[in-house]
Length: 120
Image 1 (spheres, rainbow, N blue to C red):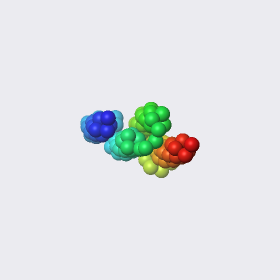
Image 2 (tube, one colour):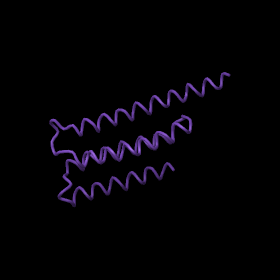
Image 3 (cartoon, helix red, strand yellow):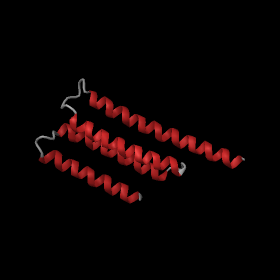
């Protein structure tokens, strides 16, 4: 499963770069944003596979991160070609921060839950 996540992320990243260079309706600016989105989503999904959290946490976060990755890709495509006043970039950054915090909190809660069960 680990190599599948990396391979899938790499294929999607390469397709994004090809589409950004071939399609005139898909600007290079948006391609760059979506390259970052694909990289972050792949990293978070890959990190989930190596976490020590309980399986229900991993399954739920995998589904959530996959869905939010799709949402961020959509926002990246719809984003205007300018940094200033770009609400889409703020939304994408906020979602990435949420994912990082959710990953850390769920990992901590899972460890605390496992430790409390061991002590009983």
